[in-house]
Figure 1 (cartoon, chains in turn blue, red):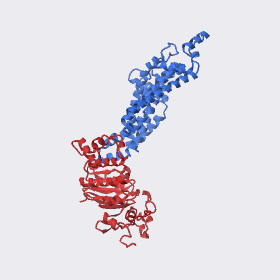
Figure 2 (cartoon, chains in turn orange, blue; figure 1 turned 180 degrees about the horizontal axis):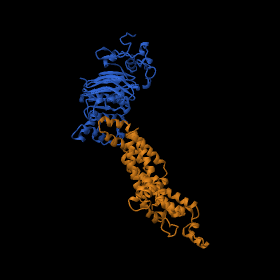
Figure 3 (tube, chains in turn purple, blue; figure 1 turned 60 degrees about the horizontal axis):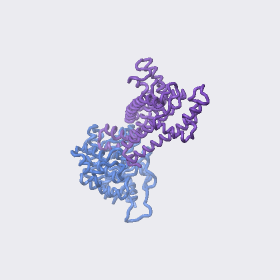
Figure 4 (cartoon, chains in turn red, green; figure 1 turned 135 degrees about the vertical axis):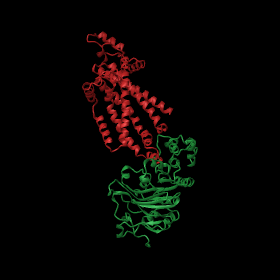
Length: 307
Length: 320
């Protein structure tokens, strides 16, 4: 087990390193950073000075090494926008808003999705099952920018129940979390329904019933514990959906997270910030997948013995 | 009084009276301490019979179930849910066919065993669990309790399943082809173990199998099933010595024997009919070497000798 954990850690580190190379190369092929940084009135001397300052006269591999070296020291450069804010500080200041929104959305998704999936599987073929399946299908088909705008229009503008946008109180979380979680909610529901049906038809559930244990124990202990394994497997993917979804949802709801920061910095061609956002998101991904692997080891005893 | 007494049990694929029948008018008794074999090819309905006794058939089959299943005089099919939960595991238990699939992969063997022991009200669960594993000949039971199913071999898992089945001291245990998934050498070990356990616990056993070799080894009486009906029943000795139904004879001929070696074992031509497409009359007649025109009508079940019944137009005839 310790061997598996260290293995996953090494993989995680390698993935991060590889991603830094991709980001570095992408930032070099998408244009000359010097042209971007200099004002229109800069002279050739200014240009040479900046090239030397940024070590752009050195070979690519040395540039990459110093990029990694600086990154390891927390130096990702400055935003090119007015204010010249430190890129990492900027991203980090936006991170809590994104993480808290994603956490609320993920919790909502898991609780409601698992409940709906279990109910649908247990009442298979009934009108409840049909209703849940229709909701799940709609949830996966509705684009989030549309859902967000419609929710704002109905719940906030027409009914005046919740704030239209912004960040601050718990009421601000409800609509963005609902919008961000809808797609994943539908996916979790369908996944749990399918794996619950599998489990309920399995021999070990038959054996549990033969033992005479209550139907609640059969459903929630024997069937559900096995049905959650695929959900955990997909958690990494769900997290990815949340992060990519955040770019749209945070923009619609004016949520001050890294999703909106990514959108803003792309619009204003703020390369250091884009690089930092991408690298931070990558690190979050890798961390999430590592957490999923650990969770997987905890809930599935077969994984602990596998190589 | 019989322990279990199945009367005119018919199980259809749905509530409609003309829905295809998986079990057709089955009557069968099991006495205390007795082992009854239920023999037939796949699709003959023998597993459905086992599940019906515990009322664990899927909803569409449960809706299409008619007849009576008496347990100590009380009809299981009319039992309230509470008594049914007591019956399952406590009075009637079951060993399932596939040991690789019948244990829950995410719980330890001990926790699954204790779940059954707890229902039996054992005071010291850890001790009882250890004793239960020791009884089915599992070495170092204390350590094995912490193991997960995937860490055990098929034979070992089937012993665990038996220990779970016996945990609540049932009066009847239904074994649904418990040896089919095991290696030949392990099969016989396991059958011997079952017989020992049966004696120790004074249980009756309903043994579902397709293998007459297994029947000879473990059963007192046998019921031969074909296409949802019982075609012949009798004491095992009697059936082996004097089989009357052509299907029984064909099954017996297909048992490999060491006393007279054959190049090839005889086989029954054709395949058993599927549930929706059972022929009129005796369902075996299209495959039967002795079939006559009359076989297109259902023969009555007649008693040849006390305890030996057969449903065949050509029984009692001297057939060369």
